[in-house]
Each structure stands twice: as structure tokens, then as C-alpha cells.
Image 1: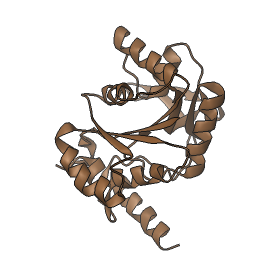
Image 2: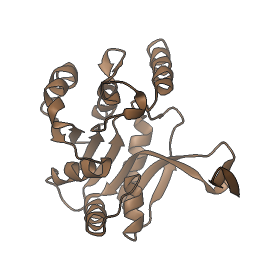
Image 3: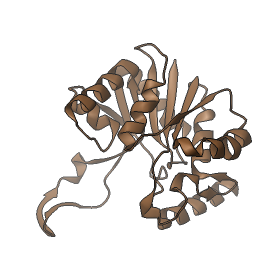
Image 4: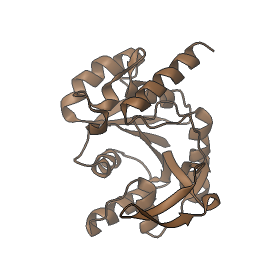
Length: 230
């Protein structure tokens, strides 16, 4: 069985709004509603877990689950203090088998494509861990105190995205290890790497943006408008 955990429990402080960024409107749905809708269209996924602040359950039921008519397919799970804690809570809610595949996706990446979801699932089935990533197009500089210390070889760099897909036993092991050793990762793949497992990448999509700032929201509105008019 394949599972999807949509992580949308952050405060989104960089957006500069009183409303958490995942609940800001984008067309006729909150941002995370578009994200969930994309995953609901994937027939390879059987169950969905939406991780949000506990105090926002009612909002999500009314503004997201009801419009998408998905009460019977989506479980709401309370988030934690950090994204890593929220993913852990989502994993704890899964009653599955070790070989099940779990996709973990940022709730504020609403333009994920079906081909990317499918590729991550297949990669995890083959290798145990697989994430979407895109090449770095700009020249990358390593800096210290605003001074360049190294120019990184661009052809060896990839920028990680979500979805990130894992065998259930593997990602649970990685999160358990991280909690025991007090390791905080910037994404789930980092925890899997630190637990000693290799992670495969598949091609991501430059349109699979993460909406973090007001400028990102403007770009997202333009992308959605283009989709609706093509």
C-alpha cells in the first residue's frame, strides 16, 4: 500500500501574514488544498494524512476536505513544534506494513506533477528511498562571514524538492534514530542518509515551487492562472 503525508503545520513567518501560509487563498482553495488535490488524483496512493495544527482541524474540514469531498480518504493529524516532529506524528498514525511506501510532501508545493509522484514511488520500491530534485542552474558559492570560500561544482549539485518517498520501515527507523540522537534534518532524506542508507533521486520540476514568501505567492497565482487558461 502507498501512503501520502502532506505536511502543513508550519507558521510560515517569512510570509509576513497572520494566517499561516498553507491556508492562504490560491484561486478557489487554500494553498494546501491544491496540494492535497494533486495527490488525491494519484490512483497509486490508497491513504492520505494531512498534518496540520490541531486548532485548525475545523477549518481544514470545512475549507479543504469538504470542497474536495475526501473525508473518507484523508486523516487529519496534529503537527509538532518542528517539521520533523510533524512528519513523525504522521508516520505514527500509519497502520501499515514495513514494505509499504510513504510519500512525504510539503503542503506548500501545490504544483507537483503526477509523473513526479509516480517516479518517486517507483524509485522507493526499487531502492527504498527516492526524492525529487532539480539541477542547480546558478553558480553556487560557499561563504563565511560574507566572503566566498569555495565555488561548488554545479554539475554535482541538486536542489532537493518533495515528494520524498521511502519504504515505511526505513523512514521510521530514520526518524527514531534522529529522535534518539537529537538530530535535526532540513528534510527527511537527510535523516535517512544519516541512518546509513543511500537515497536515489529522480527529476523534479522547476514549477514544483515551495511557496514561502509573498513573491512566491505572486508566482503561484500566475502559474495557477496559466493552468486554468490553457
